[in-house]
Image (tube, rainbow, N blue to C red; front, side, top):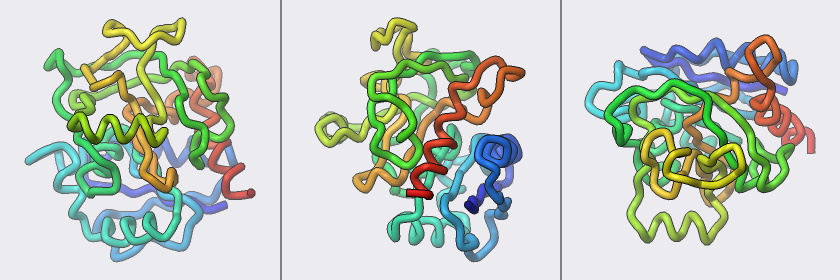
Length: 230
């Protein structure tokens, strides 16, 4: 299996994701510079966390117009699985591959801690190894993770089963207290209509082995391997 991790000026989780994919599923991972004309022929594309272009203008807005994004959009529409993590989620929204936007956290503070998530959708290349309704723990680290969309878009996401992850407490309840950033309906991750483009704010690559404090993030990458092999 081959994967590509896109590197923007300001990316800081690109190598973390590369190492996670290599260790969990032994894939061949290429780091692709944002100014490149195209992504190599791969089985999946990852947009990592960080602060692309220093978050100038608006988080993800400048990165969404990077040269390589034209090819990523084309490949996504052709069926290549794409996942955006944290800043990568912001970029996917700004590029129009996912609806809505990520705004400043409701607290106006940077949030860096573990959160509980409910896996709402297992029909994506990145969640197939999870059980629907499963509660997992992953870390977040962001200042602009507050997911916003108009009511009609939110209703459509819910109706079409496109909410992939939701912030919950340890018992699996979507409470205000469990929401680290004020995201509408406690949304932590969504997918497109094809379910092959996924964006989420928490970082699965940061919990892939016991030495890191947990392994709940492994299933994201194991799901990808299973989807590609199917």
